[in-house]
Length: 343
Ligand code: AQP
Image 1: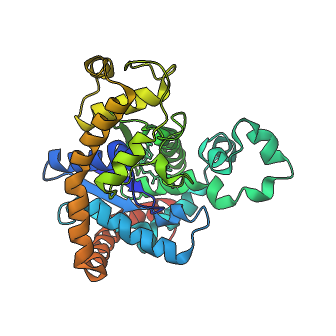
Image 2 (image 1 turned 30 degrees about the horizontal axis):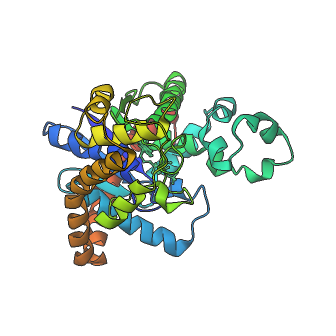
């Protein structure tokens, strides 16, 4: 049987990129799973705090993320849905794995560089006077992610393209553990969603992101139809006539074509662009907005219904999920501690 694990950070209401790149895939995997498969989805709050979060905002975002996960169709009676900080085995395994994790490998990862905005200057950055800005938690983030996956002995990890590097690292860390203490973990497979990278509506060279300071850069799963239309109308495109698919030359238009295609579960972007070839930019934006509004409508309705049930309901779901996740993680930790000679 498969064990599917994936996580999402409670750093804001999820956006269209999170949905097409991750959440919709989670729901699909849940529908196609056989009864013996285990599905585990985590709200990774310990990852979120690698960037400072205001406590009230984090509390709110945890709740909103849980409601959003349920709203996209994850059934807490079928899948384990839980908050990472309620399952201490994740942090315990992280410590153990960090004892065998290479700092050289971590220093080559791109995520901490992009979070600090240091890009290509990273080496100079890490060895220079700016090092105090690089915190240990952000640097070792991939080790915690490896622990998240391995502690449930996951076999498949559905993620967007930005996470593929961390999955490589996870397999590396598991291999190091195995050569020291014997085999405990399956090596998890990366399952890339067809929507690998949905781009920002304001800067189509950047991925759509929860923490982008510009709200019009992203479509939230709970945006109203008016908000969705407005954001698409303002989307950055170009001044060429007609619609073609060419992500290099026309990143803005191509991103809209991709979104339009993914909403219909299509990936033949050139054909889709061809079907739209005579549209003006305004017509293209209207069409994309229309399909996104219709596609997100049931999610938004369900989100509202869940929000009306109140915090008490979400708390019960979170507690029950955490109980099941602790059970799953503890089964692995018994093997890990035993293999290492720990109590
Ligand atoms: N733009 C995207 N296109 C496709 N997939 C995406 N994912 C994120 N952005 C896109 C996928 O969503 C899952 C959860 O992501 P995360 O919450 O762990 O954090 P992230 O990747 O850093 O996403 P954000 O929205 O950019 O959050 P912030 O701004 O807080 O860092 C992952 O599977 C990811 O691949």
